[in-house]
Length: 223
Image 1 (cartoon, one colour):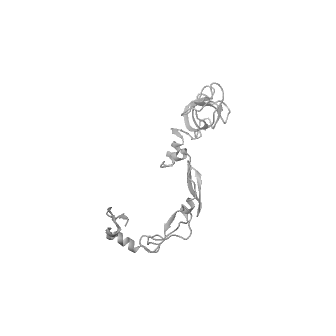
Image 2 (spheres, helix red, strand yellow; image 1 turned 60 degrees about the vertical axis):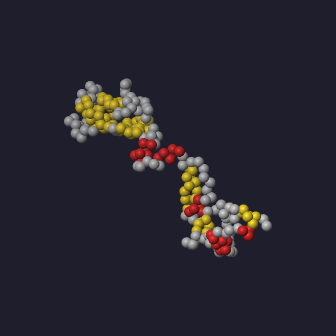
Image 3 (cartoon, one colour; image 1 turned 120 degrees about the vertical axis):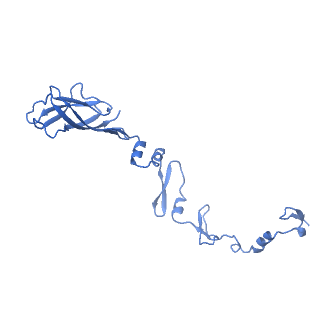
């Protein structure tokens, strides 16, 4: 008689094997596939490597998954890709660059703006695309020819890298309304500032040696 190893890991003839009760119950209860304790019954037809789910609450029946998970399953993961649902039961991959991931953890728009490269200060903001927007009010006295120069809060890339619009910020002037035009005469304009020529809109005379308030906005390229 060929000796076999019993559950106690002892070699001996089959007639001397000691069968532990737990092993015997497992052998005794094994019957037709699908009817024994712990057997799982699946669908009649299946696709290799396709995800399944439990059907019911017995823990013994499984079914082919449908819906969202089934839509995601065929997608092939790739670097810098993000899955998304293109319909109720279909999914696709979208680009998700390394840069885009840097803004996903930002708490608000201001934080995202900073991550994208925007900076700002008093009276100015530089956009992520390198454009610079500035605004301000300058108060001072015109020259004998009615000219008035002023500086930006921060410089533009060059003297020709911006456009500026200026106007009189005074609601009332003793000599009447003022006409403000940009001065293009050396040393103006500059990357750091610009100048205006101010005349009386009533008489056309230079508004010379007078106090003025000039409001302005400028937009152009940052350094």
